[in-house]
Image 1 (tube, one colour):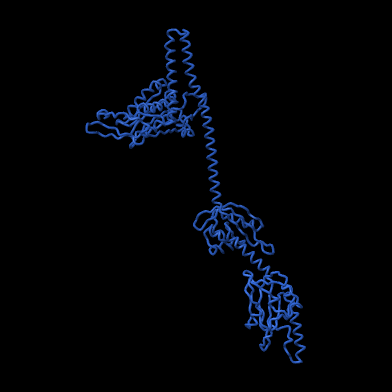
Image 2: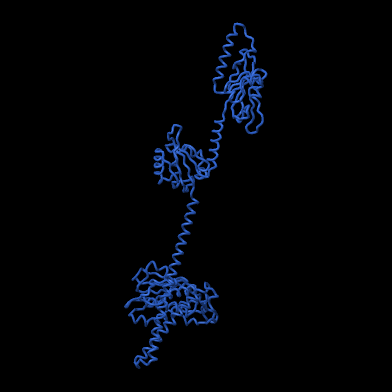
Amino acid sequence: MISSDYPNPDLSAVRPAPDLAEEMKHQRQWFAVTLSSIGDGVITTDMQGRVTFMNPVAESLTGWTTRDALGQPLEQVFRIVNEETRNPVENPALRAMREGSVFGLANHTVLLTKHGREVAIDDSGAPIRTETGESLGAVLVFRDVSDRRDAEEARALLASIIDSSEDAIISKNLDGIVTSWNAAAERMFGYTAAEAIGRSITFIIPSERRGEEIMILSRLRRGDRIEHFETERIAKDGRLVPISLTVSPVRDRHGEIIGASKIARDVSERLRTDTARARLLSSERSARERAQSSSRAKDEFVAIISHEIRQPLNAILGWAQMLRQGALDAAATPRALDSIERNARAQVKLLEDLLDISRAITGKLRMDARPIDVGRSLEAAVESVRPAADAKSITIELNGEPRVNWVTGDPDRLQQILWNLLSNAVKFTPEHGRVTAKIQRVNSQVEITVSDSGVGISAEFVPFVFERFAQGNMTGTRVHGGLGLGLAIVRHLVELHGGTVSAASAGEGQGATFTVMLPLRAVRQNANDVVRIEPPASVDAGMMRAVPEQGLRQGQHG
């Protein structure tokens, strides 16, 4: 701003005493030189607002020379408009002269030069008075603020970009003290700028990761930039925020490192996507491996079934040819017939297993539902495998509760379940071994366990023991024959009865235990003293064909 007592270099309007003329002339020259030397533009006017003086800076900014401007109205030489509205703005010098006080314009004023160029300016005006207070005109001082305005706009734009960024942008000094904290940092970590600025950045670093800050500050002091460093930080609510961190050194105008700027990007969504993608890839890989394993198992199964079918057929064909050719004497003929019959039965059993598996897969396996005494069925199954056990000197123990255990199901299918389990136990138990069959009630279920002291099952194979085509040893040199479908059939039949079956083994050579759980059926007595077995509730009625209810006297089952 200029003083209201600033003298007018053109004092021709004043009539000084003769002895003062030389002094006034000297002052005018001195002020003209002074005003011409300053860095701001200066224009003076008389009382009518006509230009009386312009310094070189004013000439440069307005595009007018002093010779052309002298005597011209100030509004013509110094044309100003509002930068935003483009409306003319009242000249501050003329207003200051009218109101008798210093007057400055607000920002966003643009000077329109003589040649049409626009210059952003700051300006102010003041009246010029004599020592006695007489008004002589006005003085206008103005400067080009284009560079400052550009810098301010650049800073405002940068601040807007920082505030609108989705990434947290934080600055700190070399002691780790936060000096700025943008809106994204507030959203990401839950602390406001007021809460964060002035604190050590360690307030968002987990205690086990404090060493990272020491490493970062050390590298910053060396001038290193850290890019895409993935780590975790703690939000105000205590949750861990996975972030990707980029840290750059901040230098002053002398090139000295004075702090750091940090850009933190929340990578939670990316990590979730990566995890989901990894799961999908793992699932796809597992599915492919299962498919390949299944394909190999089927190929091996085809090889095994070919062997299992061909072996008994060869025996039947061989004995039949010898009988037809009369190559056997009377003593050998019964042995040939026994072999033909035994191998034919083996073929029938193999085909029955294949048909049962096919029916189970297609949902066509049916049962004739009726009340069954499981204890008696287990006794019958034990007796059916006893000859095979005796041939290997295997002891079979049968333990059962004295109470009757009734279920609803198909007697033949239940017999098939129990026979398969006992037959397997005898097959895989070496000579002089032991097989134990036990039946007991457990809450509202009947528990049947078949244990042996045989070859056992590896821990890796236990989860797959009831799968189709899956066998512990699927090679052509297996010690024990068969298709390995027996346990798969057992599982289907047990589930069809509304029960479950499981296998357990301490490992190879440690024996195995198979446990079947079947739901008990309620037994109630009617007025005619006839015991009635309730139909199964957990079995699909469409999978069982109903048979006439058979009344049993209470005395028949204790």
